[in-house]
Amino acid sequence: MKKLNWLLSAFALLAFAACEPTPEPEPGPGTSTDVAFEIELNEVAATYVNFDVTPSSEDIEYYVDIYDKIFVDAFSKDEHIVGTLYDELSAYAGTKGKTLNEYLAENTFTGTMTDVEFTGLAPESEYYLLVFAVDAANDYALVGSIEKQAFTTSAMPTLEVEFDVTTEVYYN
Image (cartoon, rainbow, N blue to C red; front, side, top):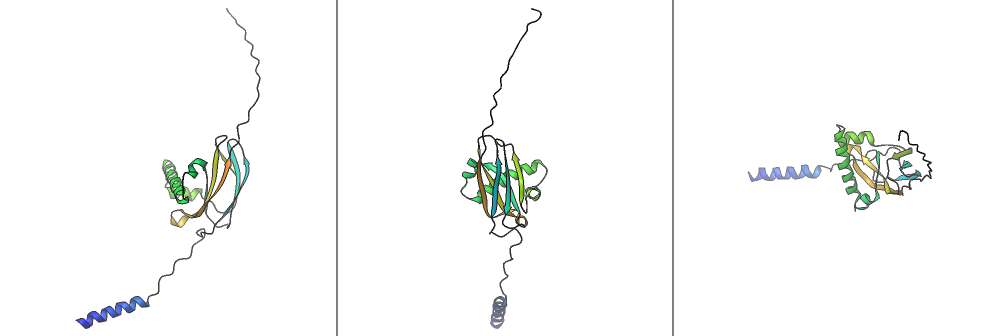
């Protein structure tokens, strides 16, 4: 019996030693951590911003959004920003009858974005344009770090208007 136990132990050890470790899979398109984005603000107005985004590689999948500067500066790590953003997007997607992944599948981009306009911003407010790569095969996990472009919307233009009001009283 001892010989059988020893023989089984030796066989298990040889089988384990003969196995080569499984190599780590190569990152697929859009999963490299060496991603960068060039962000160009074309126009910043009182209630909107117009911009271009150029990724370092055309096959990188990425997400773009605008957030209040105070909100973004409150976080110490990019992962926390994305986690909070995904929580908000998940709730929004639910109101549209979609999951977060379904929503992100429709709202992530590849290639260069030009002449993009975000509207509905508040005048004289500080914002960040956030751009980050995602791994769609891994539940849209953050890849690399978030590129942040700060900007401040301008004041609403004032108009000088004069009115001449004339009244007449009838049937007094």
